[in-house]
Length: 409
Image: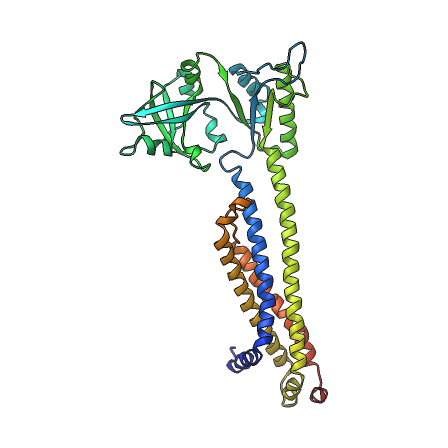
């Protein structure tokens, strides 16, 4: 039951000792402020790391070729390694159970024209699986299909910003675009979380591009995703085996790092996970240490408060006050000061993160913020801490005999 007189006494005690209450509140507010800033910055770093993988599947492997840097098996250095369709099929057949999705890429930069609108765009000729590797979100029409590859169809899938550039007054779906002198039908429009650059790309069937822009079976890059059931170590072992097999196939020295390059996102992902885990542990240790320091600070102040009010408490007991009422009064005062100050510190911390959030991007901290669960947890910790900080000195005060309290100097 709400006791108005009890709360009136608590507020009178706080108002009569403003400096003491402010010091108590400052200790807790500062601790929660630091706690909030640390966790906000940690979340910002994690957001930055996650953004690196935002527009690609996290189990991606990128296979690229270059020039040899070492002579090997009778071949001189400086030999260019050129991937072909047969290499794509080799990987697909050789590692079928380890591969989830796979695509080749052919890169072009071509002018695109629709009526009076024109622009030059990056063109990627790909297989249908490419949609899943890039996390491409088709919201109008469809993506490239196996039938398009088989028939070498003159179709294209364009990014959202390509549609805005060329089709400002109409929709692109079903229209024909002149791409490098060839008419292609727009069969799909997509968006991509990777940003504007990813939405200014045009996708073609790879078989069509190979026939029209070279009449060959050359490919520039092979991308794939490994079986998601693999763990990190299995994924890294797979990419090592893939590298070895391809180097053997092209007579490349095992020590040559440039001729055949296999980049596994699992390696980067594992490093990021380890870094964020270590950072998380450090933040928790520092944050909890900060909270403990705040709790100790208010506990010390409450001990001083009880010492200062010894005579008053003795008079209360002499007049018939129960130990329970004394404990309750001191604990509620401690909880009130701790909760209000902690919440104030939390609000300041969130405000600071909101204010300086954009300026931290140059330090690889993106959208620093604290989650709702963290706020709820911090609030609970504050209430419990305030109760503990007030209970120990309150229990001690309640056990003092009235005659001893009245003699206290």
